[in-house]
Each structure stands twice: as structure tokens, then as C-alpha cells.
Image (cartoon, rainbow, N blue to C red; front, side, top):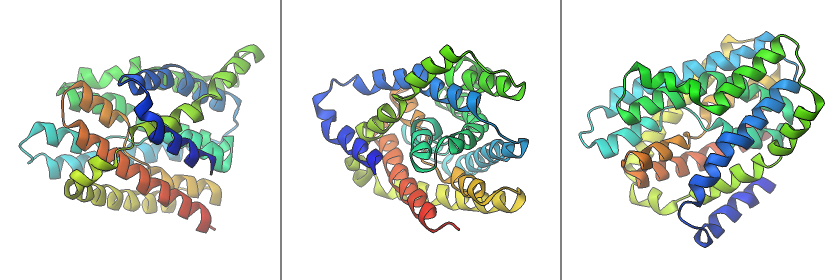
Length: 286
């Protein structure tokens, strides 16, 4: 598949770029291409309120995973290790991984599903996650309302609910910017892949990942049994709690001088596992 080739390009060519390249590209994605992808997808889509099952699942998934992560890893004395472990349970890599992958596999309708999942998910990544990284109080959680993709998500969802269609020129600009999102995101996934980090911290990574995906499967099974959706939507919903750890796990770890190698290893391993799960479920789901 084409996204696998782009990931490989990012991995093989990262040595030719400056050290800050990843941060610069991440900012470009977060502030421009990702908000444009969210805006275009939600502004042009038609959806039933039953799809808010994805938002509820996003909230439920995070509550379950974060609670268990604190319960298990709060006993780790070294904060440089403890915080990245907990952060790997805070949020899922929806915007920088699943949006372009979903559009590539199933089309624009699936992006709407994951955007609604992200409505619940983003609050935890950019609110709770940031507060955990900074050891902040409730005010740190509220910083989520300063994050461009989250604000764009709220704006475009509001426009859609009230039946307001943006002018054609705005949609065309958003579409043009959005078209760059898939390449940049998959390139970044490859750029941040670190097999060395996985091998050096394999015991911690395997333990954390086993817990994370076990809980994810439980929430997935619970969600598809609770909500009544089409088979396609059920498949998307089932996969939602099984997405990789958020890239912000690494970003926060670098910013606050936690164990960034561990954070990179956690993200790398979860990206590989989630990609395998997604491709298998997509092939066998009926």
C-alpha cells in the first residue's frame, strides 16, 4: 500500500534532515494540514447522531486506559520512566495516523467517524496528557481549548449540525491544504520510527503494550455490543480503541526531559501493532 511506502521513505531518509525537522513538520501538520483535513471532512459530510457513539467510545476508552495506567505505573519511582509510560495510555494517534489511513482504506466517510472519536480523544491528549506531563492541575487540562485541531473540530461540527455550508473558495483552500496531510503524517510516522528504542526497552514496552491492547479490546467489544451501527461503522468503532499511542507522548517527553527513547519505543511498537490489527480486521471483518 502507498502509505507503507511513504512510512518507509520517512524512516530511510530521516538521516538526511536536520534534528529539528520532525518538530517543524509536526507543527505544520498540527496547525495547518490536520485542521484542514478535519474542517473539510466534517463540513462536507452528512452523518446521523448515532455516530456520536464514536465520541462516547473515545471518552470511555481514555477513562479506562488512564485509570489503569495510574493504578499500575504510579509505583514506578523514576519520573523520567513513569511519565512516558502513563502518557502512552493517554489518547490515541487519530489525527496523525488514522485520518489519512482511514481515507486511504475506506474513503472520506470513515474520516468523519474517526473525527467524532477524536472529539472525545483530543480532550485527553491535549488536556489531561499535557497536565500529566507538566504535573499541572485542572487549569492545565483546559489548555485543550487553545489547540487548533480541537477548535477546528468544534467549529466544523457546529457548522454541520446547523446545516451551514462554508463558501466554495474556503472549501477548495481547505481541500488543497488537506491533500498534503497524508504525506506529511505518514512521513512523520516513518521519521519517528525507532526500532533501537524498542529493542533497548523491550520488557517495559511489551508490558505496557499488553495492558493497553488488552484493555482496548475489552472496550472495543463493549462498544460494538452497546451501539447499533452499520457493519462498516461497527468495524471503524471496533478499531478506535486499538489505535497507536499519541505522538504527543514523544513530544511531551522531549519538552519535559523525560525518557524520550522509551516514549519513541512505545509509539513505534504501538504503531506497528495497530497497523497490523487494522489491516487484519479490514481483511476479515464481515
